[in-house]
Image (cartoon, rainbow, N blue to C red; front, side, top):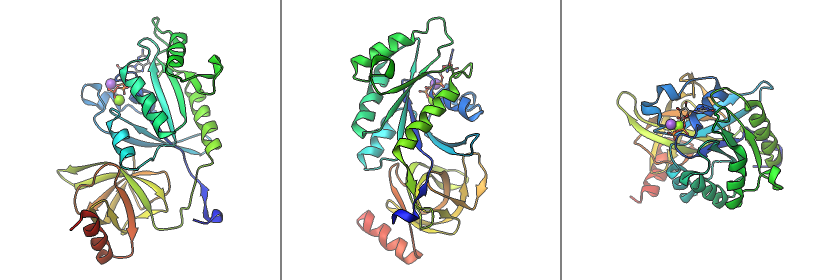
Length: 280
Ligand code: GTP
Ligand code: NA
Ligand code: MG
């Protein structure tokens, strides 16, 4: 798209970290909701995609990952949707296997990282130890003379949240994230499933353009026509612009995470592209 058609868009932030270090709790605190208590066993089973609107009306899109498979799977398929990674490290546990895995994934993706040292409300919290251990994995936070932003937070006590948001916004500004909202939409599948009542459903992150009800599209080897768009609060909406996560209904089948979605001119064209992609 030409430079003059580009408009600022929200950053897409992926929350990563070891199991139970507080990724979902931190997102809950930022959103002012309570997803964790609604999860079976407090374990995130799927990717949550949310958009938070800040006091200044700017937005941040958050992706909450259950493990790192989804992230690496998407990256392996060429879908780099993440602008910034927030690495959550519990201050009592410190660096754990999945923390290190997340560091490696983030480095491989070349995505800037912000470290959120969580659970600092606990007596056993040792944030300084976390910083030192990070150094061993070549993540040098500012206090250690490096350039990686870190912030002490407690998702439980809701402390440090404003600082975390500030650091995300600062990092996002440096990235100068832009997209053209005034074109046919292109997006990426974040997750997809077969819903008993609703049929195939996919959560799509819009990369550019605006996705609208009635749009004809191709997504991976599937195609369809948007029957409904559902936002992260379960509300039906008419359209979704850049950096917005949205559930789509009207799919021919279940696509795969990382599949690109593209709006096309008509259904004949959609079938043609989908069949070509499926290798039929
Ligand atoms: P998975 O999705 O299963 O990987 O876990 P998660 O990283 O999303 O962690 P989750 O938010 O489910 O939190 C795990 C546990 O840590 C829960 O019992 C939370 O209540 C607790 N927890 C999260 N944040 C804090 C915090 O800041 N302080 C304390 N004390 N406990 C916290
Ligand atoms: Na958990
Ligand atoms: Mg979780």
